[in-house]
Length: 395
Image: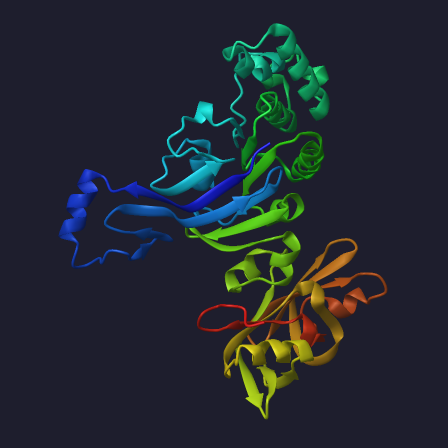
């Protein structure tokens, strides 16, 4: 239906006049550009989104993910036309739409709060936008029925929103959006008001929906599980800046920095601080808790290619890549979580809080209870090394 191009998009919320006066009084105490509450404060105002550039292919499913206040919803609202773009260019297809009204952008948006009209039936809610466009009645009937069938809500068309569950209301909100056959479908945390079971079901429904309609999706969430399961590509944001863009597998296997490594993955990656990357006679090793680990040939090659100097590093390893009851390291179990087929062991190893995930089949649960000390190890080829100063991944 449509590709999108965002070129150096920036959003600044101007300072209020009163705020400007106060700022002048405090000019010596607070320098412009100082970061405050995770947002950059400048003479222009509060910078919510910085230098956001992204090319989105036709029918691609893009997920913007990050913690609260990172600028993802603001970016979505700029695409929708609900927020003015301070600088940069936004194209839908080949058309520059910076100054195009929301109703003329051929987009639809699904909100977190559903935003259904309580006095209208499901059918009337879904047909409302088509009626405003003076669409013929028979076409409205066809489009509403088609959307209802896709979303499995045909049986609810005569009901009002108050008679529906949260998941059913969200389907109606999605149905209201897709009856318009928009070029782009924007979704702003649509599942955050649902319980865990419904969220899982609705994620599956959105995946199915994506196969049935020819629309480009842009989806905002703070839930990295949603991002990993839904997106063709994920855009990870922090404090208004893009941290990394990649497929779910790319950002999981090759996080560019400590923030991405800690944000993507559940439970999050384990970090061993106070480690040292050494290079003796052209061989790289990493010192972890007093022991040296020789890096693999491919890691050696990558470090030599960039002529990496010895430095302090943070070693990262995924909980699923830990092995228990063997190895040279030891950790004291502080929490043991039984998850059915898996056991999550929260351990302390020389001041490092780490988690290991092990299968429950064939293990002695008593030997892995709270207070026990167990040995653990990890494969060198699965570790990540982050520069302790910059936070960037060295491998």
